Image (cartoon, rainbow, N blue to C red; front, side, top):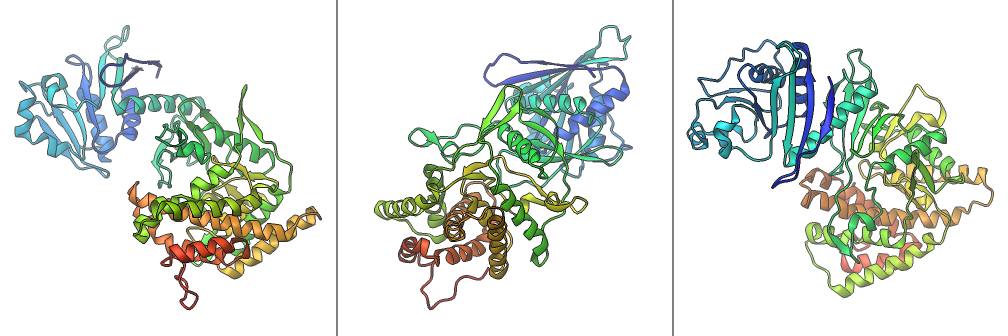
Length: 528
């Protein structure tokens, strides 16, 4: 299969094109499978070309693959106009508009209702073009020159949202074929909290697996402060470069970050090692041995002198940003912006908000003046994978470290031991804090245990405050209400952290202005 990129000129909607040569029927079947993996409910695919060009052949192959039935009878819909098939993910509509006089005739067919949540394949779309949605994928088939009627030249044109999808599909095919994974099947994986990043598992015919990480450049959001968007202020990764740099940096230190088989940095695609799915938790919560090794890994990482700039590719470097006051503050303010109005159900005055920010500014000054290390930032159970066949600390596999910053070593320890998604019992938390401190003290006699304990309380409080806001935002803004079930646990962590003297002034603010969150002393805290 030969492919070459081409960008179409911008008109009302962005367009992109991809030209593919299919030498025989087997190649057509294979290409249909590639297309089927990309299609989702609500998609419209139009098939153009002259008589005998292969529109029905390609459509028939697509219907069978989407329906999961290679023996499915798929007659031409020339006379019925429209055939509807059941599929495991959505209905499939196969239509032929050759006998239509215009788009107005689709109303009588109930076209909009039938295709709303279906994958729709339309032959002869030009007969009712005025009634079809502009955002679609067009596939034009022609006889390939010199193919003696067997080969086909296929031009795919994506319009609107399909333009970027088509460009990514082409980049994906180039990547997997270059890395020897062209014959792998794609399996969607459960989405994480990110709204731009996703993962798929690739499975070869021999059963070997890899992961496809899809992380296109982050779109620039609206300015929220001094002309900068939230993501820039909070130091969130804007491209996949950050993941590549941190991955290479962690692997160079001997840790189990996934090996990168191949990459397309511009498209934001990485083909990476599949570390598996064995967790560091079980149905009872944290597995102490595994949490212990994860804690020891942090102690070893934090005891090293680490570079602040890491290579991405030849001539391309990534400077790890500082977890500065501006970033830390805009994170805790998520509590005010999302948790307070949507969970507590109250509004705070400008003066109360200003007092909150001033108290956090004063409190954070203590950790901001201390030495920094790599803060991976999402070092907790969903991103840790147990690798029993490896030895020592390499049994702890790590993913999702693209938002790493230069910050307090206490942050990742708190992220692990006050896990937002699984309750870490206070006695286990205390034991593992002691383990971390002993390992650091053994490696460096100047390690200040008391200062670390204060930093731990401060960073744990900052993180709990931030996550309360983030999970409320995931519910209200992003339509992900399942994160709300974790709020009682995080509230309990926050109450625990505010009991430390380092957060004494802030505790007074929470008690005064959020009594629903911080109850009076004679009431028990929320259960986790």
